[in-house]
Image 1 (spheres, rainbow, N blue to C red):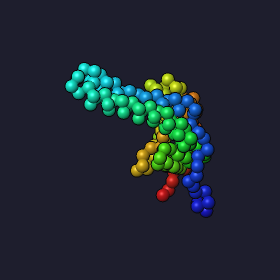
Image 2: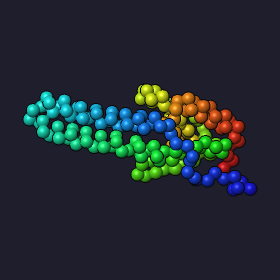
Image 3: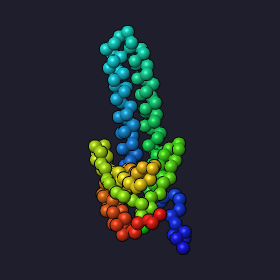
Image 4: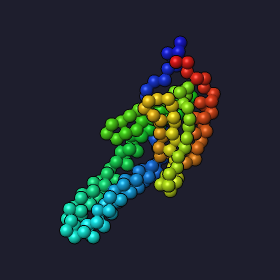
Length: 166
């Protein structure tokens, strides 16, 4: 029966690469540094508005540092992925966790992406595109060589999987 081989929602087994914590921290720091720097420079240049520019800069800096210290370690504990012969499993999120499955028969494309920060940390992201209205599944924070191997494996598995008749 077709139902016996159905793909079921379950927790994926693999953690992302440990270097992803540093990559996420760098992203948080950059996202914090840009507005804090702009507010700080404007506060230094515009004396009448100095307090009203430096106060939000200080609040943003404190919040950004707190997020940088807390969230990447949490994300590392939550983010999981797994590829079987039948499907790709991904779990992401911090406060709202999302688990997704892409059956091999539904996969349309497999891509790898390595942005500048990812390259610095020797990481990559594998994007699995399906016809789902939720969009593509992203497996972030993988070692760049593992990501290339995974993309190759997914391409081979997808090619060998007959299309879904439904």
